[in-house]
Length: 253
Image 1: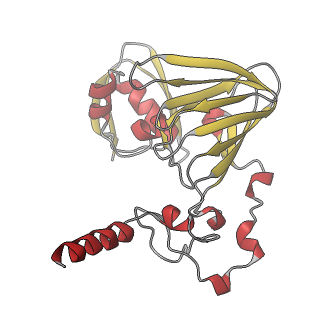
Image 2: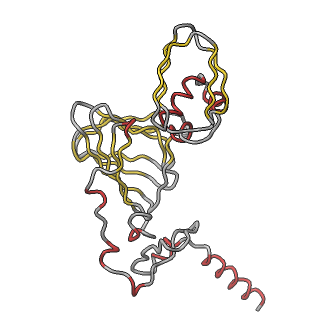
Image 3: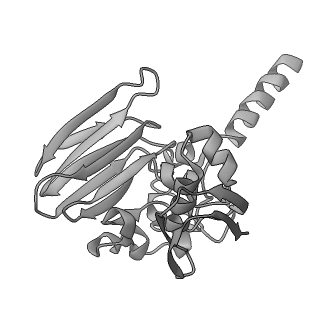
């Protein structure tokens, strides 16, 4: 009897930590209740009586999406937090528009594999193997597909003189996104730390933090060679251009 009780307890415990995506296998759908807190397994289901046809529709990819100006791309995404109908289905999508000269920066999706499809134009797409540190690249044209394995750093850049449009699908309703440039320069990671872990010189770090709206510069004392022209565009819109021939103190908290 004791063994049976222990077995039942183990089964119940296992079911209690199953992700909602696993539970969705045993029901028709599980529309995310975004008013509730997300858990490691996803969102709880919206009450079935409150589900409508609108929960299965999303029109957000019909427009160009959010512009990432430094990279000359626009990105729209359909993930569980914007399209609750995807909850538990293990799928999501994104649309990218890239003008000539544009690029998607090095980034990764820790929660899902990406399958990229070129709708129009052409791009060069590639990823870097974490295990081998080997780069795999391919020029993609309209109608081509490329798979970008889960968690691998990858990128695209424009090829040719025409605007490119791509659609991507993911093997998760929330694949996650970490952009390398943002991780280094768009937060309060101190300049001296970025300098140590990347070997970029501190002037370059300051320039990139200004470009991406990062902070954490603190009080920086930097020697600049005579007649060096330095242009910094700060996040609050102030632009300064001077010729420095002396010791300069930057104080940006």
